[in-house]
Image (tube, rainbow over all chains, first blue to last red; front, side, top):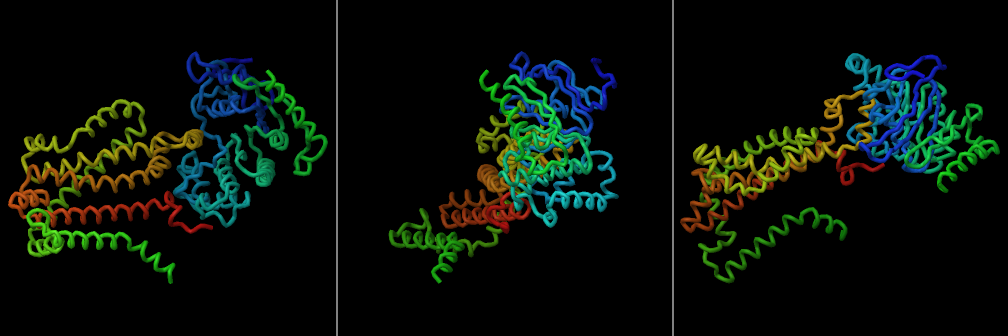
Length: 271
Length: 260
């Protein structure tokens, strides 16, 4: 194990690595997470589940470089993370679309900020617009490009929000309970949409959720976290073949996977 | 028919109320035989206004001019300071108590100081209008910037956006409704400022006109002056209300957008 700025590139295709990471938001205050070690492979889809207040969101802030660990190291591509990362897509429970921009303009926002798109924006605007329209169509929002966010339903807003997170082709997509506020049908529809997007053009995904079925359906690997300070209790590989369909969620195998995770969470509660 | 009438009533409620109040005023003055040097009836005010239309317009123009110039300076300073206060916590910490303290000083108490520095007339009126009206603009712009959703900021920062990017792409557009709302308040305050200054230290403007008229017991002219200020205030207020609607339609979508 290396420490410091660089990390050995020995292991296979590690993309994000946590080495005994702890974080306290205030100096000397309580730890939000404790001793987290995990690694995410390139183009892996991981899910982090746990009760509310287990520091899932803290994990996201660490990966994106918005927070610094109090102790331990976080690496991306073998390089220690310092400061906000440049090429990450993020989506949250609230879609956070800008109400003064249309769907299309909202989706194109990252292109106005991230290089190299930013400097090409003036010349290539038409091309980028086509790109955005294609992605919007891909998530089933054709015909809504020129509508404002308040004219969209919650599910549509979330689709647009995911488009915005992906338009600049980030290597890493971070999702913080992105489907938490949606009704069950819409949620499952969006699971499938996300899976399709990911399979067509792979990227690494870190999904934070408290929905166990969602975690099992979408992820290659599920991490269960304990309540504050957050620690990783269990790492579980989900071996359901892809592409997964909603029918799979009603199989014995799927249910048993969910149950195992459920038991771990139940065990946390009893502590 | 009944429905239409109701709609008509609501649309014209303000005019009708005004007419009713004027009538009441007229009837009271005539009925109780109130002497004109105490409380002139609307008809007397009207004829005084017509009679001295030209001097009134001259003074009104002066007041309008000082108010708008003071207001324009207030917009500039208010936006600049508001952006600084809303963006940098240290500026907020350093400046805010000072500004609150300053805003608590009655501006009329400050006019004599301005007179000593700049003489009587236009300059102190402009400065008083500015001093009295920049604070709401500053506070609103700062609030609009400071209440940015932290998640939205995370999204942008994780794209590598600089502070300036965030301000340009999100902060300022988001603060626009706050800004326009403050303009409505600020323009009316600016009128208060310039008229105060004119009553204390000027020989031009509606404030001066009213002071001069009241010292010669010409109450009808005083009231004519009051009404002119009121009308200018309403017109400017409506202008900025219209701009608010026009430029930040997305922020008040509840009332005037087409629902799907």
